[in-house]
Image 1 (cartoon, rainbow, N blue to C red):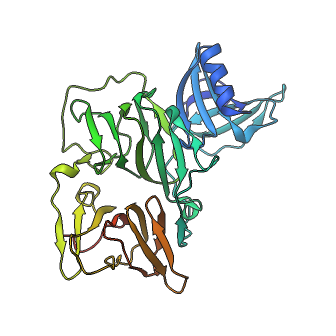
Image 2: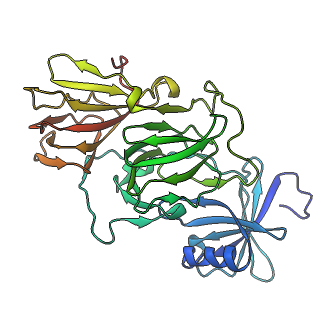
Image 3: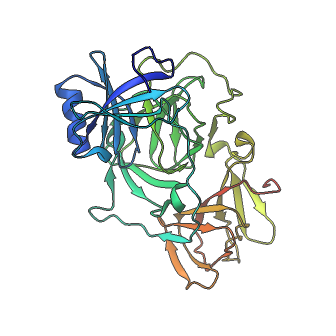
Amino acid sequence: MPETAADPEIELAECVLPAGNLSETLRFFVDTLGFRLDSIMPADDPRIAQLSGYGLRLRLDTAHEGDAGVLRLGTARGVDRAALVAPNRTRIEFGPARLPIRLPPLQPSPGIQHFDDRPGAWKSGRAGMQYRDLIPDRQGGQFIASHIRIPVGGPVGDNVHYHDIRLQLIYCHRGWVRLVYEDQGDPFVMRAGDCVLQPPRIRHRVLESSDGLEVIEIGSPAEHMTHLDHTMQLPTGRRLPARDYDGQRFVFHQAEKARWSHLPDSGWALRDLGLAAATGGLVDARVLRREPASESADVPALQDRMFAFGFVLRGSMSLRVDRLPATRLTAGDAFVVPSGMQPQFDDCSDDGELLQVALPAWQPAMP
């Protein structure tokens, strides 16, 4: 057990305080006391925030309500040590200086989330964004999908930040948003139909948006830490499209430049978002749309995947999963189909358009 500050295993020390109402407590420490926000988790409904200032590091944690105070010592290798209690009742806890990415055991289950715009359906999240949960059970914690919107556009109060995550992609559903990414050139505008793959730990920033911006964000694991980078300036002045970020490459798919492929004997066209090669086959994503004068009203079947997610972009269709009753889906509805359950789509409207995401990527490669 450590006796002095010279313990070589300890990389950081932070004082852990009960969070209370985290948003109000955070506002007090940042706006009133002048502390700086460094990390927050999770983005859609925060429970943990790390701050620094005046030579002190703080951790506001909703899990420590009622504690007299906790001093957390982060070790370089995550050495497991028993907690200590100081004479003044301060609890000394030990843990990894950088939390590892942990994937909880997958708990596959089918799910349908219909569009809901009633009060309470949307939560206030990071940087003033509103979140709607598209996978409430999170498949045991392995996946999260969020419908995110910014009703009133303009500059976004965002900072340069990054995520400790295995996977994260963003599909622009409505409006536009201006973004900038580490080593990916100047800021650019993502418009409806565009998609970005955010590799793990890539620094980025949301700069501004249109009124009524809506994006679909899919990530794994469901809960992950978001870190603010107070030193990096974006853009970096470099554009390195082949750069490797923890085994993945950055992707910016632009709908206006994309090629649609006809799916034979289906009456449907497919737009591949180009994620399989950039992730080494971890994930794939595509958009399906009805072709003009098509006689077929059936959506091409999803191949059996460990995780398959869909979001209705336009129109309507019926979904049946195994022996469950058929459900009518309309624009804004989302669904999850786990491995071993074969979905069937039919009776799609003429304007039908569907976003599909699957892990692992479809094999063989989509046309």
